[in-house]
Length: 185
Image 1 (cartoon, rainbow, N blue to C red):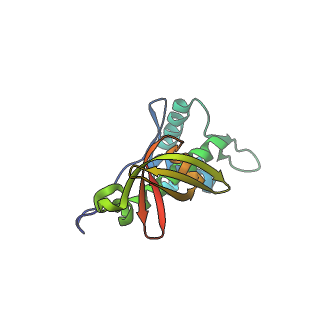
Image 2 (image 1 turned 45 degrees about the vertical axis):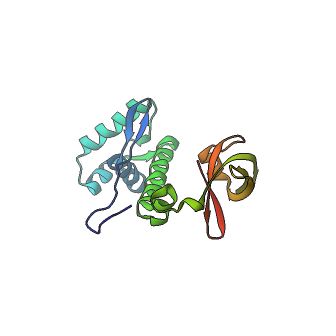
Image 3 (image 1 turned 60 degrees about the horizontal axis):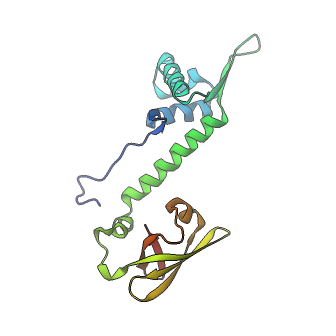
């Protein structure tokens, strides 16, 4: 949680494949510009980078992934060549942007910092064991038996259940927040 107006939490994100870095912020910008400009040379100019640097960067991504992230087209009498992202390239860019957006929101969300224990009062955290998980549509219902003799039920998104990998028998904390009960693992 930011403790001063002079500084704030920050992080760098990159995607790896088999322990090798594949895509960081600069690579995401390159892929994004190729998608917009439909040209490696135009993307390089837009980013203020040399064509050679961008080409080498893309080759390194493909070498580490062992698959192409772009398709190129030769120019000819009718016009110049071009480039577009493959499905893998599009998915890689989307995954990077998703993680980046999520972390950006998280780092400035004071409520998140409270939830992870920096400001939460002890009486709002109840340890328990998952008794049941019911997924239906976009939501899931988690039934938690509290360590104190009580059971609470939390209605959370199905995506959250899958992200936290919640299953019957897991030990979790029921974090009580105003009108809802969240699940922390």
